[in-house]
Amino acid sequence: MTISDDAWRAFTTAFGGDPDGIWCAPGRVNLIGEHVDYAGGLCLPMAIPQVTAAAVRRRIDGRLRLHSNGFDSVEVETDGRVAGWGAYAAGVVWALDPPGFRGADIAIASEVPVGAGLSSSAALEASVALALADLCGLPVDDEGRDALARACARAENDYAGAPTGGMDQQIALRGRAGHALLLDCADGHVEHIPVDTAAAGLTVLVIDTGTGHRLVDGRYGSRRTEVEEATRLLGHPLREVESVSALHDPTLKRRARHVVTEIARVRTAADALRAGRVRDLGPLLDASHRSLRDDFEVSCAELDSAVDTATAAGAHGARMVGGGFGGSAIALCESNDVPGIEAAVTATAEAQGFPPPVFLHATPSPGACRC
Image (tube, rainbow, N blue to C red; front, side, top):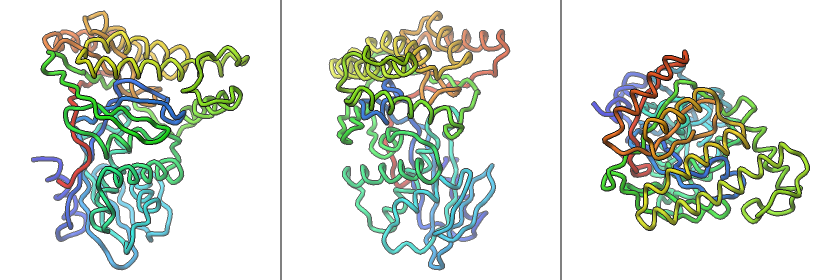
């Protein structure tokens, strides 16, 4: 039974009859480049095999009906407002305003963990966006997918109220199997860079610490506001800044220093991947985590424990991923070492009274598609 089958079954149970089709979009891990997308920086995400599936059928009465197993179902006029999980789907309708759209039934099934920092929200948005594009005749070439990703980001920012950047939606729609996506968040330019961890005998291990996070609780937004204020005071985009010494406020200086150094780490990581030196990412992951922990202050005890333990157990490098304040970490490991690293992280979490971690193996996967 696949996640597409789950979405089909959820649809027929909730609405009766068959959907017009099923569309899937992946979660993501960001290899490096955290909290720089909304600063117009560079990031290096890759899509993961876990996807969200949207079964969709057009309506002609102006109603939008939303269903997802585990959440309350929602029914609203297409110009109405929706809160909660449904905002991420209804917001896409609002942002796209697709031609000829007169309502829809949408059932969601997902294998992307919610609150794990793997971008379950963008996977939901992208699956719905691609469905609407296909059903309403919007372009779905690379330029069209860029436009869809931007609409999804508007939905998340302005409708759902989560002040994220646009990286998650871009990788969900524009990812390519076997590649990471070097994304320039200033102009949307992308470069697909091959990442063959298996050939190198490596595994990108995802460690879900079980400490869910919420990007609409204010802390993520405060970081974005601080970055914007630092940019205003310096008078230049942070990607163009070499020194943050002109900032006198110590908090703003730390926030800006993270962004400046993280963008530099992305450039170094991209060069390493182009040359096939995947192991060179290890020290960059370590440096990124220290910066996110100390300068950007978005880590937590559970994430620090997972990162430190994975590294001590033999990982080449590790760092938290996603917005922070909980969620997941990634560790670059020799594939043969993965069982021992998983055991060490689990034992440490238990000893410290933390939730038992859940592990995923991330391989660079394709972006959204019709299933």
